[in-house]
Length: 248
Image 1 (cartoon, rainbow, N blue to C red):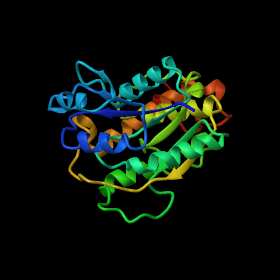
Image 2: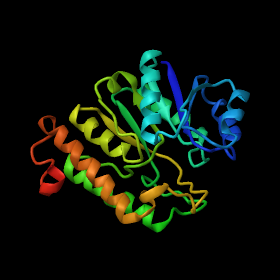
Image 3: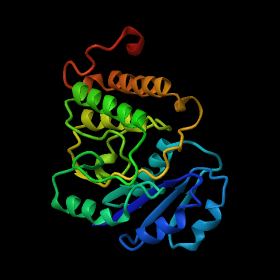
Image 4: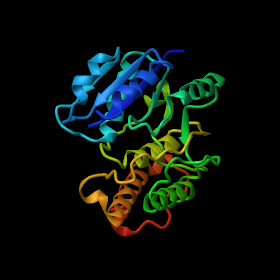
């Protein structure tokens, strides 16, 4: 089984050397997607034996994942594991994803920071935890899922399953599009627990998404639009309760 570990990075010079060093203890094939970093990150990447995709300008978290998926498809990997580069995802958990993939029976193995109780080094800001909870509950209600963490970026994807999807959301709302399409195309999903680590409570999304109301409205807009796009593939009633504005 060929496994690619894909890591989007943006201005991560503080963490990237340590993270890549640890990741390479558990994975031989590593792809870094540098999303237009303007700090020293691009100069540090050649110090490790990793492949690199370099965006000339910042294109967004979702675009970085799309590029990782395309790389995995073209290079004929069996699975791609995605993780962040800010030391909030522990490389030591990579073997758990690989072991679950080897069991068979799943297309998506999603990490969950809330599936089991772990003592967090730093709790996430209450507003972020609240929005995650609201969106996760809404996904479960509308799509018939039973996930506990909609936004965790620590995931393993079966590459053949990714070929069915048409993902084009470039920003932080990418997970909403992904979950809708995963359900619409019958992908088999499960969760495994990962440790809750939150190192920097002052980290921001940037721009208007720093406002909680704006961010939640954007997430819902992407969710409802994708439900409309996939309506013929979803169970009846998946879009129940959507406003006329969202349907348009």
